Image 1 (cartoon, rainbow, N blue to C red):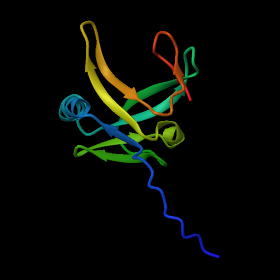
Image 2 (image 1 turned 45 degrees about the vertical axis):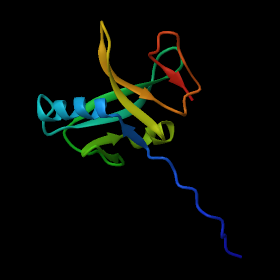
Image 3 (image 1 turned 45 degrees about the horizontal axis):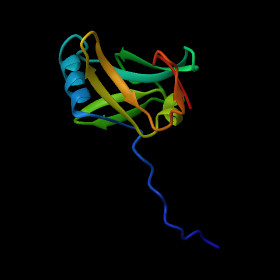
Image 4 (image 1 turned 180 degrees about the vertical axis):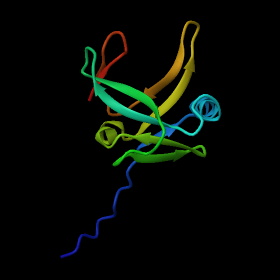
Length: 118
């Protein structure tokens, strides 16, 4: 017997807002020219996990390539299950600015906002 149920499409692994794409494009054209932004998830903080970002010169074995807004992001293969559907933004606040993540898989964050759990 064959399965005739329609296949449900998965959400994209990650996407970027226009602001995040504009900031990343500026970085790729300036100080980080020739590199890729690589997103991973590390163990740290009160809630146990944190987003980590590094500029790397080449794709590492197993990295997922994300193409959005004409730009390439890399995602560590160990982080993919934690990041499905995540939207990366770039926020400018009065005293700080930086990339932020809206992750539908998060179940909670620590009080300082530095770590999360799924």
